[in-house]
Image 1 (cartoon, rainbow, N blue to C red):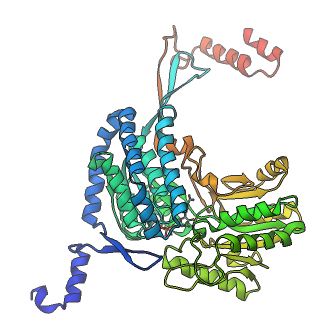
Image 2: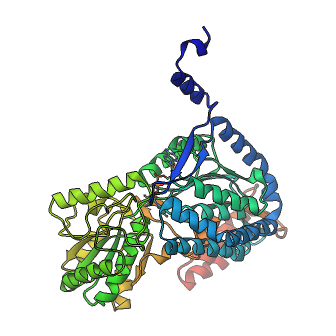
Image 3: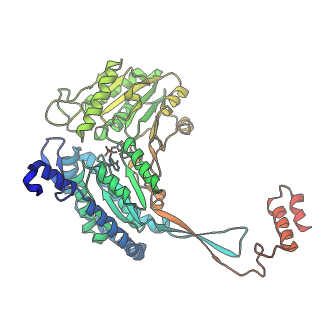
Length: 522
Ligand code: NAD
């Protein structure tokens, strides 16, 4: 019997969606107002296959036009970015719930990143000769060439920055790009795609594919040549697993549980302002947010009071409504995680000296929160919170503070706050993280010149800086003729003369004393 006669409409829809005749859609809603912002179609398996095929087909030509031409396209992309300021900022505010000034910082970082890539790519990606002492007659060169098709899987918290960064460096290096924006940043993803189009980058070179985790998985299964994943530690593990099965190299930029260590000599008022900003910027939805404060006992009480003052001064209206300087929590899941972690901490002995609850109204806002009497076993101390919540613990010694900071599954960044720069540098070297800031915390994550990434559960690989650009390329070493030797010392036949040559060279090059080296003459 024909399907239409037996199946009710719902099962017909299900059958169509299984066959991907009717594409699913992703609806974007404002976390501030709940208003619908836009809708995109989820990529079908067929579209994924087509995109991967086209990207693969187009890659040799994109590589072949050379770096200079590719940088011309990227200059146009920077200009498109420059021209698009207002619509980009509007979208970051509408779709992610950002504060406009904070969105502006993300936007500026992107302009600087493209500019940095334009300035440095010719030097960083150029081939390099290497002198090989044992083989002076041969010429050795290190060349960099693109992987091929790079898959960029992006998160929602800095959707412009964390999309453009791997896209721009990947394109500069000669790769073609498959781009999967977060399902919570699909409209912003569309803007990214429109910037690429405005730059006249050939359509086959860059492909946007919307979707949820299953689209991410399907893209990995399509065997790209490299993956740049930015997202949570839990998803990062799945991505790493799927990539490992096919031996696809991957950069993993995962979460953090950053500690700010405040030493006993710190200027407490100043530090409180710095820490509160670094913990509450974008409502704490930054991988490098200050989530843990470890303060030395002599200044603990004063610091906590000053942090509360700083929150009240800037980002708390005090009447249950959100301050204009406070960003919304972008996703409903994020609100749940923050609420659960804080409630659990309060139920097991922590105290909120300010905040500790969801704010009133329709918007998805959580009150800026400072928790004290926290213990290391609490989830709020162990797990990434990703909300405007800072947990404080008091340490009796600097050693204890360092130990507490390092006792984490994560290792993204950390900061030290003190008036003694030498002491700070000494302690910085004991922190098991990807970067340490002194009397600052957040800015390093947005600096294109500095390699960025974590250790331990925060991932591996680096973006930004020379390393970030280089990671978009494979290394090919070249060994070619420099001059011809009268005889090949390593090849057949193995004569007594060649053995003696090897023995003499060993004495001459590695003899620890002059007498040892003179044995090369015998
Ligand atoms: P997420 O892990 O939920 O999602 C990230 C991306 O992965 C999304 O595009 C999502 O659709 C996709 N995805 C989900 N399941 C997948 C799967 N099985 N296979 C392939 N792709 C899949 O992360 P999020 O909530 O979007 O982002 C927030 C997280 O990102 C936080 O943990 C934050 O710390 C981290 N982050 C890290 C950095 C860094 O530089 N280290 C920067 C920003 C954000």
